[in-house]
Length: 109
Image (tube, rainbow, N blue to C red; front, top):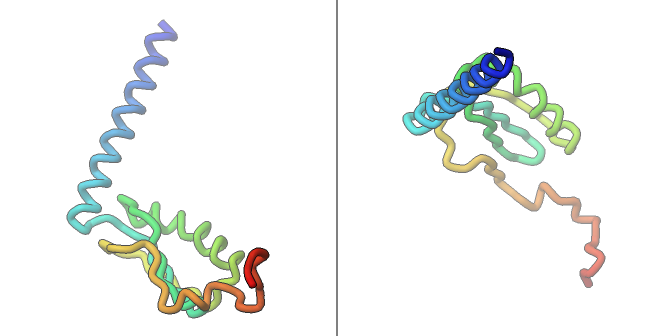
């Protein structure tokens, strides 16, 4: 009996996951998915994280994204959670700002 209950639980979890993925793909396709949009002043970039079905999920996830960017040295961080349909996940005005020009590659001349 326990094996049947376990198998039923696994089957229901699988169905839930599949339905969530279908709903998420549909929301993303029509532009109704929530995204975390993070703009940074230095480097001058826009990052999109997502998609999420609920704004509450995006709100919970944004904390980790902000921490990661802070650890990478990003400054002037602003966050927006809304319905977006980004064509690119990372957009930087000047990629040169992302690299330390004082560092010389080992194999560089």
